[in-house]
Length: 417
Length: 211
Figure 1 (cartoon, chains in turn green, purple):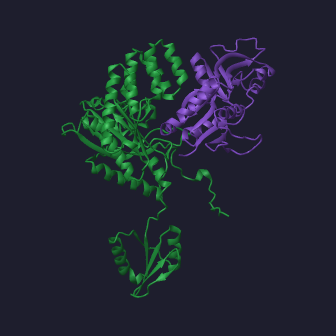
Figure 2 (figure 1 turned 60 degrees about the vertical axis):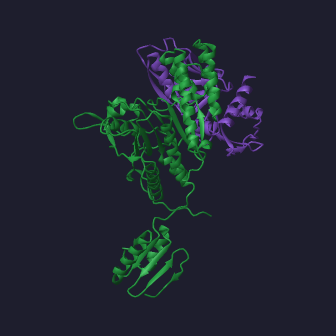
């Protein structure tokens, strides 16, 4: 029978809770989160990306330029009354930085960031208001090679984290854009079609296309977007179906990016998806979405945003993407065994403090994580503490001997000095 | 590859839903009165979760289920980020605004603040806002028809199949707000990582409901 853990009963009002949408990340979860942060920092740095650490809050107008809906932002005012908001998006901040402080840096410029973004939580969706993103931005190049590099850096980071079933979907925002432009649709009509395509509602989309009185060929092309998801053959299919220049150049770009991503060795990890029409308001070309087969939510999102930097005063084409760290952590949590935060606990008698500190220092030199037992208690009490914390090894230092206790088996070794 | 998981609604839509999936080759035996909430298809290709209708979109949005079946009334009330590729055409109902039949006065005077009892407060609020009328909605979870006769509200917004319950409770339809029917919904990520499987399922269901 499973033992039920006793919980103290405390009146709910007496428990100081964190605000809705937030959480304390603790113990092994915190270890995992920071390990992911450290690993992606190493991955990004190995591709020549340098870290940027923008502030946690910004002027509201700055963030507004980035296409995050104002309703999603956590806003407040400074003492003079000007509107501020917590960081809802890193890319907008990076765009501001590159248009201002780093405008004279030689391009292309490669930057990465790791940190929390804050967006108003949607109740019931199980999404926190605050979540960590780790992303890269490659600024100052329009080339498909730059798009492909961003995809490759992200895949590389995920593989190094142990997510070996990465699947990347590449879309192109200008493809559908070209179709509605060629049909000379009004903005609301185009938005209506985009909405139905976004829901993948074939019948309603067909009805709307008919109601709008679109040219039959144009209507067919819009409906065909629903099917345009799969391998590189999709590019040929789409090419055969398109006649407008913007869509055709979007497809050429996507083909170039795909080919370059294959040269990075990732042909089995990428698919083409022209039915994806969502994404942040600022994407102007390539759109990137990444998945692991073990999670029903994207773990990577990004794309090309050639107009965003210019909104802050200096034109600069750019492409980037961000990894969703909590979602990646949730995949890894299902895999790694629970690890204790400490390898060795050193217990000592008062007279043996100097030896104990010396022993702990030399064990740390060897790479162990070592905790000194600063509590005044017996060896038995310390052993019970080590067991409760999952620490495997306990060393008891006395003036003339050091004993090693295997905490799980209870076996004691040593006795000499 | 994991088995496909399909969330299906308990209640009036359950039988036609199970029947539809069996016609496209995903037969499942749900015995009357059984309390099992997870049932495998006969060929073991899919797994069915039997959930309360209002919870179906939640299972699908979170990816606990890859696809689901739910009434469009639920989808318009609570906005869920799920794909809605197909109208399954069964379970047709009407969402209506109803008032006591014997009312001699205008049931919708433009200056008044209308008290409306409903299971659909958000849809109701949107509807009244669209008419430019003021409304206070009172959320009920069942027997909405009770509200006018007991003085809880002057109007109700409710889903009706034939309208018999309304008539028996002395109510009549003033306006039809929407026609509803069962919809297929799909998890956004499942649609991408299992594209061909889900595309085939949607096509098979689409063929079936059209004939």
